[in-house]
Image 1 (cartoon, one colour):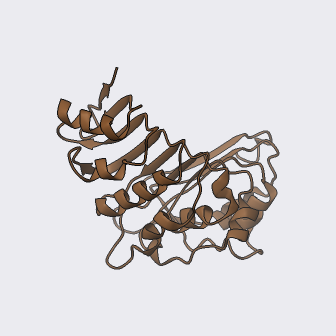
Image 2 (cartoon, rainbow, N blue to C red):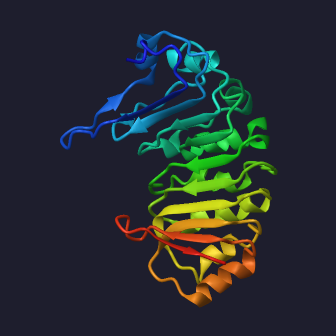
Length: 255
């Protein structure tokens, strides 16, 4: 099907559920070896789903079909590479490597170690949205996640920041606080998987996000006092989206 679509503009592979008995992985190297085509109009690539990507993906080696695919598709503006358990031990890529692989990227989604690599490169100056896809840190494996807070000193175009970590909210708050300090255009923040308290650390984390318009999070209790506290640090705030009950998402708009 992929090979029959030479004018493909978006390629999003959300592969099906893994077996409950054994882990199932798939290899981008094998996939792109089989595809063997260049798509001149491709601007979006998302690789993931419930079947875990095989890591390392050898992006630092010039001889792999996976890396060759990026080198042949330099107009990609949206790149998403799934997180998988155990990635906290993966070495990050040098700034020159990510710049050569994703020269046009504006929206990046990936595990923390790749996000750190992007932020440490000149790509940080053109990045408009960043999604850190890690769901777990594991014991003593938070190195790359913690490095998000100090990976760059300027994110002039960043408008959206998303996290999906299911534990350790303080690591997310620290990253939000330090990133928002250097991202003057930040308008949307998502803390998707961990329950937050509007009266506590999240307010401190957002104190530099003066242009924030929307917060998406799991919030069990929303009170007028809590919303006022949020408005005190984010005077342009417009919408709170609560995902505490995924089947019944609630929204509050500030007028």
